[in-house]
Length: 165
Image (cartoon, rainbow, N blue to C red):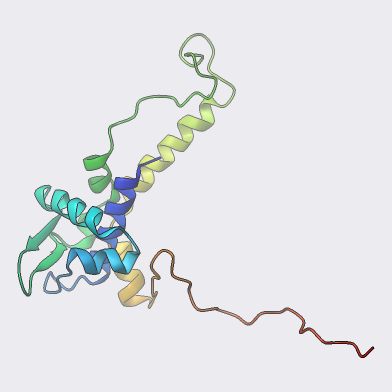
């Protein structure tokens, strides 16, 4: 569907959306990376690319950092994906060898086309406002990758007992 750079860039942008307050709050690349459990160097490079594309603004030095360049509702996931993905016009035919497009479509052609359309729709219709609302209005507390979230419920396992011999 999309690659590691796109996934990481969306994760970084989502963190900036979570703290959106009109652009006053800025986060360093390290803060963004650590909050999401992402590689610091990769996040730094991706934020530089996002800055060049005018999706984020960055300021160097103490008190600097990154913020979204526009309100979160005005930036969709597709704005980020198009920076890192080439447009894929293939049909993803699992039969290989050009079965689709040469005669009748393969057995799952229509499903694959539908899946691609669904992904495009998700990327174009989903804005970063989703992340701002989830954190600021709904109280969702994201947990970085690789960090175990606190248990939401008790375990229902029976306790072990030793039988007397």
